[in-house]
Image 1 (cartoon, rainbow, N blue to C red):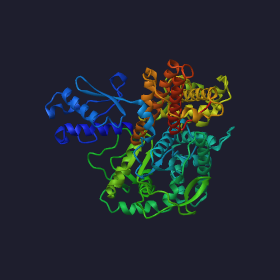
Image 2 (image 1 turned 180 degrees about the horizontal axis):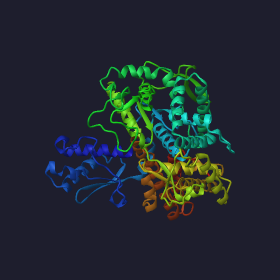
Image 3 (image 1 turned 45 degrees about the vertical axis):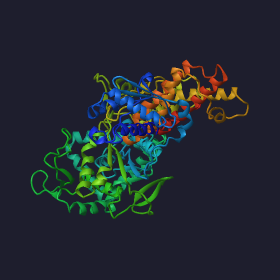
Image 4 (image 1 turned 180 degrees about the vertical axis):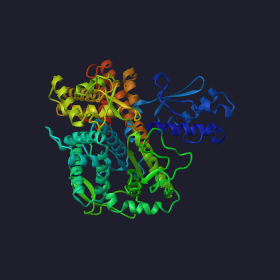
Length: 630
């Protein structure tokens, strides 16, 4: 990466000035380097001289001059740095030779993925009803992480965990068995959406009915009766609808992992045997947890406040013998890391998508070096329990390689809620979704609403389909916020053609593509786009401010991608792409691309092509289309 190359040369100069970095408290690799917002202060700048001043007992300006002199003497980073200046009180400002950067930019490689295999688990929606937009945020984050990790050289395996032994599926089965319901439902998942809400109303009115859930849970776990087969059929059909729905957003999986497979293949029995050899997995003999198998917590390791299911000591097996979600998750993660002497059998669920089961073939799934789980912030404590179990079993390296990507939940803006027929008379600032109450927006309904709105308002219908624009707009809206932010979804904001939206990015890409096509048409007959724009033209003696700003942003792409993949933050890519598109818009307005002297046209067409290449890579990572025409 460009910044890393410059940092290395800067560190060499620092070592020449301060040969022993220990007393300075500046180990190698920690020398600060940043890109100033104001290009007048350099393309890169460092305050290292000020950090060294006390230990070297010299003025920061003197140290900065010495470091600058060393860098100049070493060849100014292979000609990439054109000018080095020093500014009070001791900044070292580096100005790039952009022609040299353009000649060498394809040689700046990302750090290799080190051959690591990463399992990313995302979506993992309970298979008891249609998906809502909150579930979709999980899937969009997870898919963006998969694309980021693959773009940075990692081998990625994508899992969708199916909880076919949980309370939610048991409730839906109870509703199908005991609650009469009619209506004009098109999809089975939509019917179950209403059934799930109705059975929870029944529980509230007739508390004795809750016992049906426990009975059905037992039958689902036993897996060999009428109820178990009904659960299998219900879950299978709804998962098929989920998979098909996600494909409309460009989201795919490698493996469906069914919770029932974990139980029936004996994964929990193997995990139980391992845990029993530790001192933290015990069966309580008294108190309210009598008969439960628990994971003992240290005195200072308490559960988050206000989360009902979280005890100070985490229950893995209830007194009635039913396993908690966390118990099965521990067994699943031991398998993910290749730490169980057991494996699934695999068969194709749909073309290219495999599923676990009791029959099938052996395939090389699992055996991960790293595991990334995309689960909302409410699951922080159970995820911590999985880590604790790994540590208790002596698998500290694997515990350190388990990453929980936490995110905030999604609610609806008053305008969006009203548009979808939700009662907004309460005057709330946002409306939370609740499957138990049947409140929320199904993914299919949101897509249809936005598609219809786009189709009715667009003047040119010859580019991307309105559905593709709708899904891209939704996807980007769910990705652009910081992960911890709770999103108040507003579909009109998501469709805006200006500001930080997916529609704005796609328009910018399409606009640049049209410019290139016009440039090709005006150039040599028969030459394709690549031949006109890929060759490096001479740079102008003095870059316009808008040209320089665009170049500076383009040069950051690899570092942004690497940082986002390391920190697992898709919104970092969104922010970069929006800034890049905004700078191109400024360039487009300030610098006529197809007018003027031939040399100017050639350079600006080349710069436009660099923009489409880079924004195109960012759109690929975010899972958005690259339209030649909107």
